[in-house]
Length: 380
Ligand SMILES: [Zn+2]
Image (cartoon, rainbow, N blue to C red; front, side, top):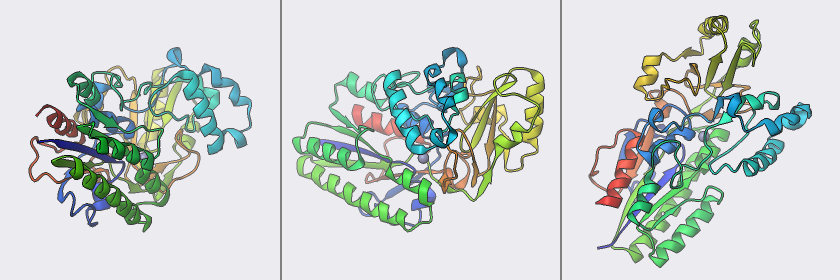
């Protein structure tokens, strides 16, 4: 009896987005709502492929304050270029490609909107690809297990398009030279960021995915006795209707970046490092007056498994409410329509699992548990 284990990750296909949509009701009718992990895809994907939490694998937010280990000193001269050039997405994309190559980073990398004047204050924490064996910052992942067990597998190449990866996987299925596939489709995430979660373009994109999954499923049944189908997401997506210029609040304080404190402005949080107590007091007081968000207590971060005792990712984490976008931020100069990375208990944060398996062999309630399912598929 031969079985093909298909694990398909549709980025940002959240519970709220599909709960009233017939997505996969014929092919994978058994639906599960999953709790996500606090953070962005930079932590959700590593949690899914490793089965561990951010405080264990330490793949959390991309940029951290770490001047001693910053690999970006060679980019400092770019601060002399006019902002009209360096803030352009197209210039940033070109520089990102150049920097990634020079630095030998293997995972996802983007310079985003980090100011070049301060870029040598930061390190980037995903130097390896979590979608490869030995790709985690700490511990192993499902690809290490596949290699150790000698299981023939397919994993998406992020440099390839969605259709390209679909074609490559289809070819492998036809040759019947694999037992396990991890396919990763990022297109819906990008679309949602651009058009929001109530655009008619979203159900249209879901119909395209359905066709592709149907095609893979059919092909699988031609060459295998059974296709075990699992389609899942890493998080959902919330529309952003409130814009918060948090940088202006902090810049108004009698403090100097780099001398008194450091910060990374993500799209839904700000992470601070303090160089003396007065800076901590002033910034903490100022954040207390920002009603669009709150300082995350250490205990709550511990419960969410995203507390780091050494403060690597920030000594203070300020998180905004669902629907608020920090803009401008180090992630972008201009607003986007929708975002994720809010509190995991906010309605639009919840992820999904769709399967054709009536009962799951292991308990799956949170996205790191998807690893158990994959491991069971390999080892059972
Ligand atoms: Zn995204």
